[in-house]
Image (tube, rainbow, N blue to C red; front, side):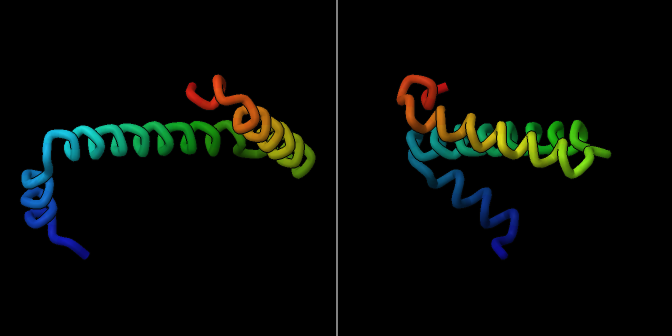
Length: 74
């Protein structure tokens, strides 16, 4: 594993464009983690039927978003 000090040094050596891409990546990762925590909290205590219905709706939404380039940008 890379030591924190080495990570800081490597980040400092990135070009401004590289730093911007890293910032955007980290923000997306943080957003995903917040959403996953919210879904887990929301889903606590669901029955198997409720879980299956949620998974089905989620997979349908993913398919629809990937089929429409305009919604995939959101």
